[in-house]
Length: 212
Image (cartoon, rainbow, N blue to C red; front, side, top):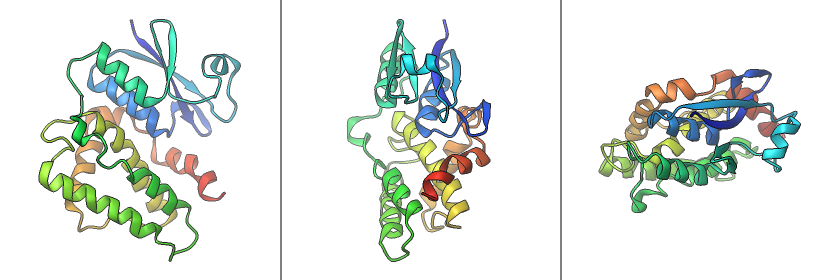
């Protein structure tokens, strides 16, 4: 029985997986665990009635477990881990929050119109902290094996790389070699290649937020 999951459809391309890092995190988890699933692509700019009935707040991803629709990627990934324990993707608790501030600082910098507001440095500081962590514990956050924390952070770093490159002509500093190797390693995984949004859809998805 395939798990049903509702995810964001690409902007302007309703039949293609869209640019939601939280959706990709869940689909990545299913791919890594080889759990069969069925994607329902949802146009978030014109949400269909059937979708609002199962997700009244209109949020994705939502996954159907035992006839009940569940929202929130944190909750969903936890349930998947419980129901499909092999291979284990559990992150040791001491590593669960590594890199957790990167996405927030990335969005602040992306939206920033003031080069002196400190938002670029705040992001660099978070990436430096990740680099230091990977230097001591890598290649992945919890060591040799990929775990849930990597599957959550990987899609966010993918969005960061594409959008900052496009809108700000900014790249992750070359000196952060462990971060660069980490990104290359995650982005190159078969599960990631299969579930990532196309570059143009990531840019189209972020454009309204950048220009707001």
